[in-house]
Image 1: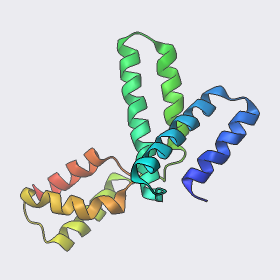
Image 2: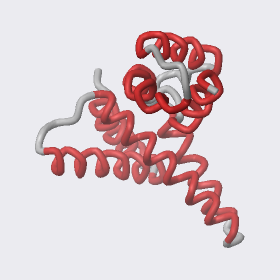
Image 3: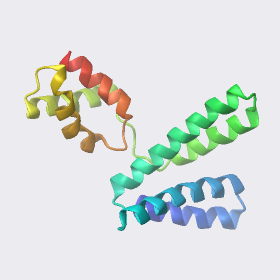
Length: 147
């Protein structure tokens, strides 16, 4: 079952159960997916849906930071709950060692020897990692391996 279908089914379950926070979270995610599909003009594939979920999680992390600065623990707790709910739809994250292994393979495929070729390595590596690790973490590991 695709992630989008799972989100839709879980939204129906949340509506039946009267779980307002989960309902809002799932509607937010499905709305972002629908918007991207309208912009693209075709249904999204699984990696694109996972990328949207990651973007929504990142947005909620920013909301937590804003709520903490504003002294609003209620909003912080709500955003943290939304993050946990959205993360449950993402594949198991890669460990640093797994990212390093994939990065070494990509470096060997590209034949990269310096940090100037990092863009080529990332171009090969990111589709393999999509949805399972943050881009900043992957970038840092590749930079260390090439540095």
